[in-house]
Length: 378
Image (cartoon, rainbow, N blue to C red; front, side):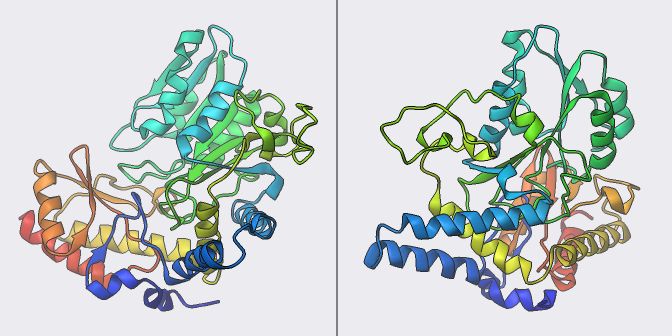
């Protein structure tokens, strides 16, 4: 295992002296990822141009590593182009009845809202759980569930506040009531441990450009075998079928694996980037990465509290923290702009300045950010 501190030498952007704390939006690429991407481009441009069979092995190895990361068989994973379309596979694939209800909440990123709101024309009703101070509590979700609830969908980590939901408890509750449990894991996969078996998750979607530190334009879904049989793919393509390479035998017999949701040519460059990132991050271990991220979060929040700068999440337990640390300010845009001028990349969303340091960020960087904030928010 490589030590966390060693990771910094593999991130070229650090040479500029800038402090990057916007991994909840998009992550920088590490040198091992860049090398794997460049190797692929070299092969495709100068040597074995038609290399489809060779890279099918990389696709499979990438799924194997994803399966190891979230504790499932690789056959339960499919690649898609983004989180929204992954969630649409579920939303549009189920047979809905008028009066069916879905439980969402009022601080979700739109990707986890619109695919389900789009079902209202079929008579599906949406119950929005009201958040409190950036928190979506288990108790409020439990209270929102009724006898007509068919599905609960929630982000593992809320994109604004950074609140990590009690996914395991929600999953147990849904499983006990026969409710489909869907998780948007784009703000947790790669940063926090995700165990679809233990958490009783039926469907999961996550893009790879944030905490997984890969490329935009690629995401993956996980679906249980039981739920898969209830989903009718609204789109199919030549690679959706079990005998795909028998090209003139038009037999629409879908694959038995989650790959039935992969309709055709995939983003090979996206998978290559993800493969490189998973191989690199595996050298540190997912447990160690989560430990480093949560340590940064606790330290960051502690320093902000010492400075009298209130964080959005107040008094929550460590189990509900993530890699996101947010502060609310009436001059959030001004603070963001000034941080940029001083070499700090954060994000501004809905009147909130959001910081999201990854495992390789260190306390010196956090200290520097806090000192700047003390000047800007006296």
